[in-house]
Length: 149
Image (cartoon, rainbow, N blue to C red; front, side, top):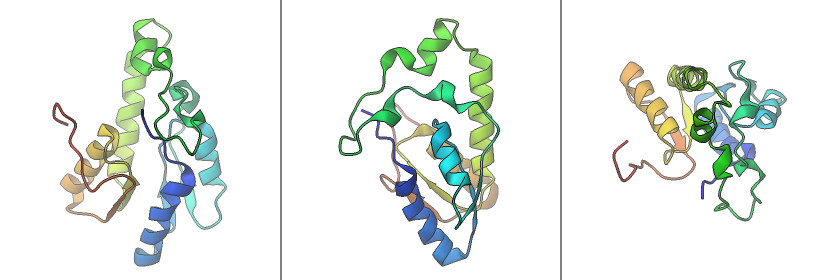
């Protein structure tokens, strides 16, 4: 199953970085529109995201019970299945991912999951552009998928 952290779990790391480095701005990428809106409504951070229709990325994982982090998302809703069926345009989905990753990589700090290729790519690009940067991993210090990146 794929564990989807809550905004509160991300905020633990964000608040530690804020305390240490004095930051108050946060860029968020999420599959969940409601999570992005919760972030925008925060009073201790100025939060923003790219204007992307995020509901198309909902594969059911956000509905997993908080106490069961191993609930599988709905296989038929996976992006690649919906692209294959013609429901979504692959080029548009790819451009959304590239835009989010590139925007994350332009940040000064990173809070995220490193068992996610999305998070690892953003962090590596951030390091390549600006050298080592402070980051907070919600799952592990670094991860490598069985078949590479």
